Image (cartoon, rainbow, N blue to C red):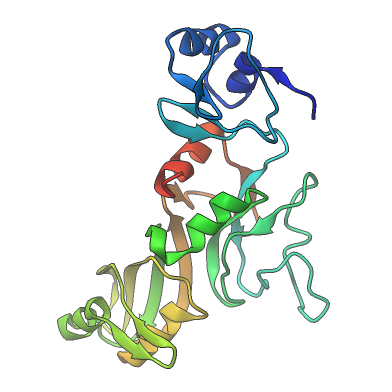
Length: 239
């Protein structure tokens, strides 16, 4: 993509009109590749690093950010000849994107998709502590002792799994619901840790990744993330 005026790139990234973007530049709040920008600067959106008030922003129009409410029974891959249902038919046409992390086939809910590699890496790596929140419907009674075990850590075959937060979310005594916050994403981790404390999962839905919530998105629906959402993800990932 050819270089374009910086104020145009900022406006497209959600910083208001070109005039307000020019004001940001004039006030010295914008840097390109570490240098304070000036009016008239041009950028290559696919190559140059742009920061506003010290925070990196996405100005590449080729980058794409989607949130999908993954239905139960769909495999988290863009194309899998061995899967009964994959993501191919759920993602609208456009630049190719990839799922950020995985949801097992029977788990529903929020799945981010993007072609922004650095952001995807940070969102999935536990070192960066980006929270993933789940709503779990379980069999059994979520006693204080069981919830305390989930917070302290449960020994699984691949190491200790620990919930950042877990709390009751209603339901009947023998069919309760829990809200669980994790920062890891090992294979079937939430299901395995709940099973280990005697609370086998009936239904599991991811409702949040970092600042992005599932909201009223229906199963199978996709929405494009706006500039504010993308900046919020960048902040959550420490970019």
